[in-house]
Image (tube, rainbow, N blue to C red; front, side):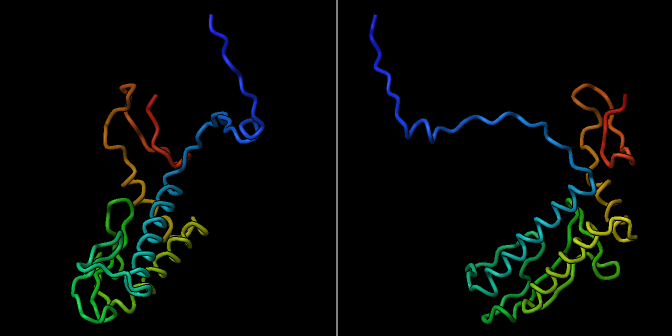
Length: 169
């Protein structure tokens, strides 16, 4: 039988990472989830636009972002033409009449993206507005489960009271 040496070091005792108790994950409503995801895409797009047009971190070949891409390059970056759009999930929504993609000068890109962001935040802050309800309808369409049946073999249906897709009992 071997005699194992046991260390009792204070720094280990003080800095040892303790496992956290598992917390039940709260499910997001369709509306809240798609507001969050849309705002995340817009934040990424604003950051990309700042990187290219404000901070001067332009790639040799322009790379598309989440909500915009360069469609006409120029030696002066602010004279470029960019196409902008707004996606809810994977669906581009109308942003100017029936148009889903609009070309703007790069000098106006950040302002346009900030305006998109403010609009989506207004839906979050006033979910009963007509525009927020229209956003929610698109979100419901995009959130529909791709599989017709759950792992338990049950169909999914949208529950307007919980604003979630749930298994049919």
